Length: 230
Image 1 (tube, helix red, strand yellow):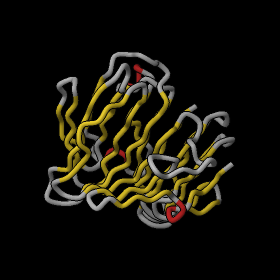
Image 2 (cartoon, rainbow, N blue to C red):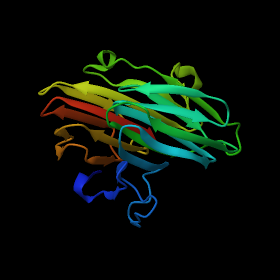
Image 3 (cartoon, helix red, strand yellow):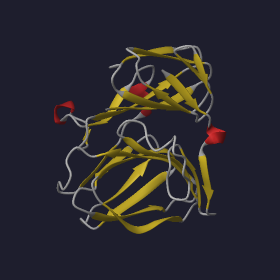
């Protein structure tokens, strides 16, 4: 099954400093049919104005992944971590027993990013944070694993049975991903693509389950972000 969540149908909140689109129910946006996708609970498509950002606020028992699309985001938290994550790179935070964090755009330009929340498999675990650069040229024409709940994968670790992947495709290129039909996949492309014969436009959400192979054909140059979760 492939369900296209059109970009224009997503929840929308414009706070001036933050222009956000919500793939799933979040904050003041509520849709009982979009409470999540499997263990994926939040996928926010955020544009954060220069010299602004999210002031300190708490979380617990959630795996939070930030994929920066343009610009950069600077993180600081109650564990003493601080770091800048630039376009194409990823940071993860396991909120665990509780953590307070802030995310600021300290750049002179807008920052755009995806913030993804996945339900944890380890409630009350110690909180943690990590970030890594992922040069985009390393994912040309193929999916690159960015974060995973499998500690043996050698990438950013989260406390959830999930995989976060990124890829870039040139117009006309095709990419296959072998999937477990029992799992829930969610894909967001930066441009027009065809997914198993179904067309998705720029920044649409593509909810996938029941498929053993996912074939993505780029109709335009596209950047892909995929989450594979229970």
